Image (cartoon, rainbow, N blue to C red; front, side):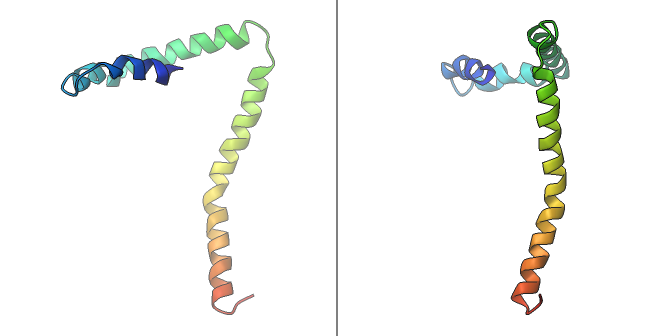
Length: 90
């Protein structure tokens, strides 16, 4: 949704106008306000309505995080296994 809004904003801009439009969005203050606005929206949508969705978000978020943290080790293991197979190992 936010990406669509951003696309609609820049769709009519000329190339020379684009940096001046995007530059304020890259400031630390703008990012802080955006994060705060997102947290306020999340709180209003899920926390104040006593929804169980935040529990699912924590569970699935933890699952995805653990997958990405274990991925490099798993890739090294599979690479080592393939290397051993290519060179006559078990």
